[in-house]
Amino acid sequence: MSGERLRDLPPAERLRRLADRAGLSEADRAALAAGGLDAETADRMIENVVGMLSLPVGVGLHLVVNGRERLVPMAIEEPSVVAGLSNAARMLAAGGGVTATATDARMIGQVQLVEVPDLDAAAKAVLEARDDLARLCAETDPALAKLGGGLRDVAVRRLDPHGPDDPLGPMLVVHLVIDTLDAMGANAVNTMAERAAPELERRTGGHARLRILSNLADRRTVTAAGRVPFAALAREGFPGEDVARGIEEASVFAERDPYRAATHNKGIMNGIDALLIATGQDWRAVEAGAHAWAARDGRYGPLSRWRRGEDGALHGTLTLPMAVGVVGGAVRTHAAVRAALRLAGVERARDLAELAAAVGLAQNLAALRALAAEGIQRGHMRLHARKS
Ligand code: MEV
View (cartoon, helix red, strand yellow):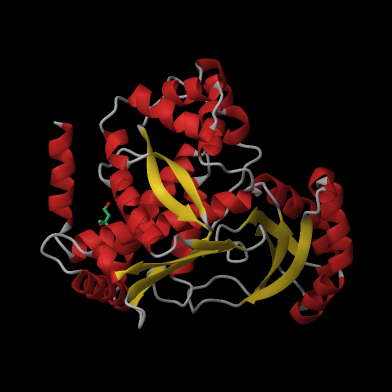
């Protein structure tokens, strides 16, 4: 199905063709077309509901991830993002498509311990308690344990005062590293951290304060990589090799300058957030993780990197934490979210994470290519002109 043809159809016909291709049921089609949320369900989701807010859902095309072409549902108000994704996906497809690999779904639950009498002895005692903590976590979430998830690792960090104005002495922070499998995992991790806290107090003699997951999910990351032959980057008046050089220059600019890195990463998150919103994810959690990861070396930098290769192609890679799930939360309550996941062909959390990273890489390429060639405004204006 060509992008051009799809673009010229009315939305209902577009949905019919894409839904046919993804094998969606009548109920899924209706949910996508109508927004998939009734007032009663909405009222059960959050507090003081007075109504609902709609966003357009577009579908990005041509994105090949690990050898499979995907449809990308994207909920977003900003023009050019969906078209940009499809264009860049086509360029990446010319280089063989995107390869994406997610780690296991290891989330971190933090337990803060204050007034610990002997920090070294306490750290040792926590590490020795690993098996007991694993048992406790399994008892807390037997369903997850049965599926093979649960505590994978325990780490102890000592946090010393941060300077003369810091009012407190050293504290100990315990990280419970928990594999949450197909769940985003916030509920499971928070419950386990709360249940583990009294045991940690008992073993360390300290007082447990915060017991909550960390959104810097650096044990649950995803990496996407792709290459684009120079020829596929060419645009009228802009030879592919020049565009590739411009994209490399843009990448290095972001590597050297946090002001540029913030905008570079915003472009990546344009695509990722649109997919996450359409698929009912906690996109604020992914945003928080992405930016904290971008600053993990003490200096904010870009999530992706582009370089010209010896093979006549531009090579890009992107890595970021990706805490997403396909069970629980809005996936359970929201019919359009379930339909969007089916449209994207997503069954497992790992698959959604890999798709999201591929989308981020392609979205970044779309922005950098436009910036390196004709500039972003001309592309935007063309799309605006088409709509009016
Ligand atoms: C606009 O929403 C996103 C861009 O600013 C990203 C970028 O500059 O890389 C175009």
